[in-house]
Image 1 (spheres, one colour):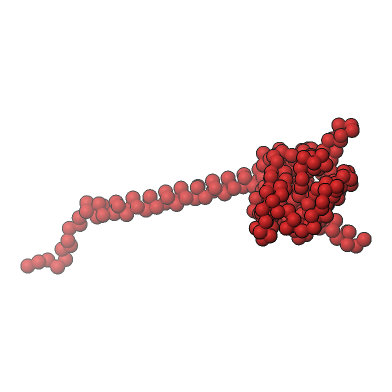
Image 2: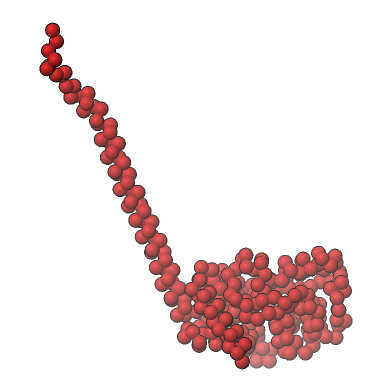
Length: 277
């Protein structure tokens, strides 16, 4: 007869073996949690380092801004001449914001943009039209003023009164001109054969001199620059508007949002003051 008070023998070995995998899994789970925690902390620390570096870099940039500007050479003296309007704008911006600015002259917009891309300057203070294409490629400020593209030519030549009269003509642009895409669209809409010639590393002033000599027939710029050039060179004429009025902006080095914010705040402040006056 079976004794009801007799207990079944314990199989300690099998129980230990069944508990071992669970213990290992628990330990591995805790180890993975520790690894993930350290990885998260490392990523947070690196992100903080990057933000701190950018903040320090931005502060150093604001303390000593390098600004690219278009320049020309005086034919009489050989001196370097800066655009007087843009020079006064840059100097006013620096003075009102307590910043140190070093103006770096270049003789073409192409050279200005290349210096910005190589991080040799922080701002290109040569206003460009705020088109979708320009916004796609560059960081632009708020509008400084509005201007329209206009045709420049010798005053003694027949002045075209319509885009259609430019059929089978050659229009010259400086390298990396912001007007290339607009001009191609205008040609397509007008249905004319207008050849676009791009000259690398040449500035507006050099184009004006070539046009004055008859070596260039037409070139395109904005109405504000055209006014300066026709005042400097009375042999030139600018009458045919080649597009609508557009906001004109400076180009700012990428990833410089604090710098962009400072410039935009100043532009808005100047606009408000002008409205009050």
